[in-house]
Amino acid sequence: AVNLTIDGVQVQAQAGTSVLEAAKQAGIKIPTLCYLEEINEVGACRICLVEVQGARTLQASCVTPVAEGMVVRTNTPAVRHARKLNLELIMSNHPQECLSCPRSTNCELQQLAAELGITELRFAGEVSPYEPDLSSPSLVRDPRKCILCRRCVSVCEKVQQVNAIAPQERGFNTIVAPAFLDPLGSAACVNCGQCALVCPTAAIHEKDQTAQVWAALADPNKHVVVQTAPAVRVSIGEMFGLEPGSVVTGQLVAALRRLGFDKVFDTDFTADLTIMEEGSELIKRLNQGGTLPLITSCSPGWIKFIEHFYPDMLPHLSTCKSPQQMFGALAKTYYAEKAGIDPANIFVVSIMPCTAKKFEAGREEMQDSGYQDVDVALTTRELGKMLKEAGIDFSVLPEENYDDPLGISTGAGVIFGSTGGVMEAALRTAYELVTGEALPSLDLHEVRGLEGVKEAAVDLKGTTLKVAVAHGLGNAREILDRVVAGEQYHFIEIMCCPGGCIGGGGQPIPTNKEIREKRSAGIYRADLAMPMRKSHDNPAVQALYKEFLGEPLGHKSHALLHTSYTA
Ligand code: HC1
Image (cartoon, rainbow, N blue to C red):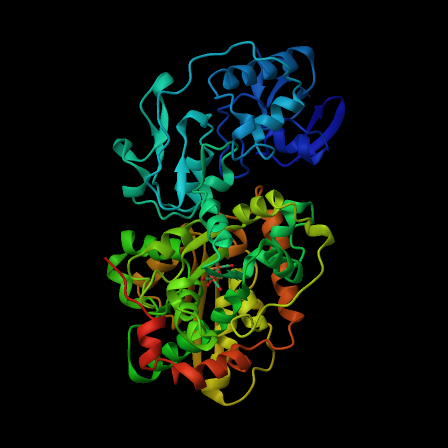
């Protein structure tokens, strides 16, 4: 360990620790802007400056390692003056649009200006020459609001290993954009929105589709139904001051009803259905021969990633559509028929923790009902904004139940929201289908948790099923490379975002490791609280097969619930 002094306090830190981290461990907060722990430690913004005794200039604490005997001061007149000046310079070319900015009240630049006591704009300078890029179905880039912190670039390069954006041009014209300044909509961007999640300002944010939903809700000719993704119930509360991971399923249902949705349904229902279809697909491939390992297909960012970067491996993908899309296809067929409503008048809204779901809903394959199956996919953040606009106070809402029949689900559907959950849900069912016996324990701890790649061997009484789970596309690459190198697996779950959907690009900001852990814990608590925890026990799914689909992988399932992919 290394001994140093920070603001007169004796501090011990591991060699290699930054001064910023050492100060944090000692309870001393140094302001930051570009810094993102373990992802973007580049010293670009010069906000975290400190005085180091003996050094000729102020040092950026995020990139200065601790040293034996170091004497650091974080709060001197020179430090405060320099930080403030650097912030004023960053603000000098930032559009003064705070009142109408989508990140207003949740902007790190705004927050920092308040914390550092900026009360006037001394240097109103020229603003960036670039126009907003609206070409992506999921994300809007507004380079005028970019402070060139590089967080988005680092997360895209290091965590997702997609490299869709990078700094281009030089000097004042520097812009974070795809190569050749191509529009994002035509770049190899997978729409995951991890960039939007880490952007300190509104330089990258989701494409706001709330106006379309307000319009549908106000249209007396539309029957507007909503589905909620598993991961939204453990995060939406954060937008109303609740602890991350608070399970607010019942309040979420009540809130959506008050917004005016005609029916409040649950994506967990079609998550259970996905298990029936995908589990059957796995067993079929195991028994009759078929491409193995089978890889899950519910995460649309992951689908776009494999289409761009590993097209040779597309036959490994399950042909199952995602639960969001299965829901849309059934809402405009099965449900329309049952409720006696013309599907032309049904408007399907999804509330998703995800920006890529907007892209998925618009894919041309996703019209098997005869209409666009899902009309609009909103992020958790967009729903939070709608609820605030409607004056719905989450903290005083009663708990209400989902509507029948597309609102009935099991704990297996809930755990889809966290990494490892699809695998665990599938194994709860596959084990029983193959062995004819119930799993000894429904909790498969080997596939839980935030470790990047997880593996397990499950004994199906005679056959050992080798499975793996990856979340975050960097980890997806690692596992695909293992498969290419000849490693044998039967079944792999891949989710695009770190942590799975609980860490999706549409979730409340901030989303960091600690918050992901809390949301994930919420998911497993919600599972435990469900009266049924295995997808095949879902009575509404059983009724759906009996009344409408026939059997898993049957003719109707094939037409409505399965798809193919584009290299
Ligand atoms: Fe997901 Fe899924 S779990 S992809 O993460 O399979 O977004 O939550 O809705 O479709 O069910 C997201 C979450 C979600 C789908 C399901």
